[in-house]
Length: 170
Image (tube, rainbow, N blue to C red; front, side):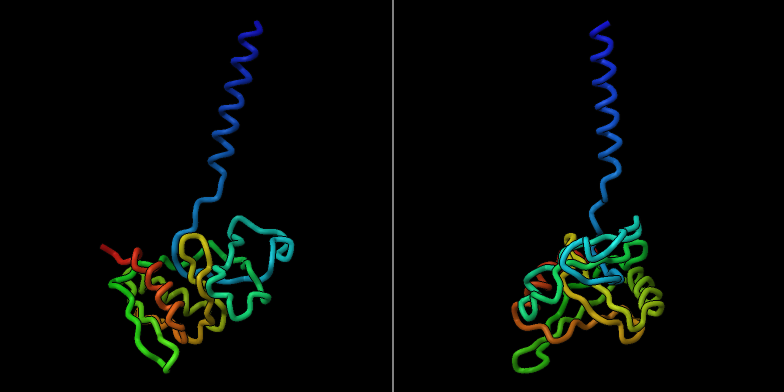
């Protein structure tokens, strides 16, 4: 009888652990996500629904004003996967700044077109490997799949380039 109780408890523990593991959040895909809120920790964000996530902002890009925020709440229900047609290109913008040109695949272009049309004047984050790398305001819909990330200093452009090159469709 004692063995049956121990066996039943062991099965219950295994089943509950398997169930708990299946409820863990899946890692975020690299892409563009709508930013809902900025802050320092989850206490600033209130309730977080299943369509939202709180992620860290990569500190490499907070050097100018790290006191502003360190985490963002994003909408994960709708996003644009970052799938590039070719390697990003860096072009000199000013003496100290560059711009990074990225070209999305035709499939990602259709998604970014719809996403940016619906979210003009809202902020989006480029998320790579589970962290927000940069944040931008959508000033107009992106209809051609060509995106410019402007005013990068040399280190930021190189950093973005290295992280984005894994997203080129092979």
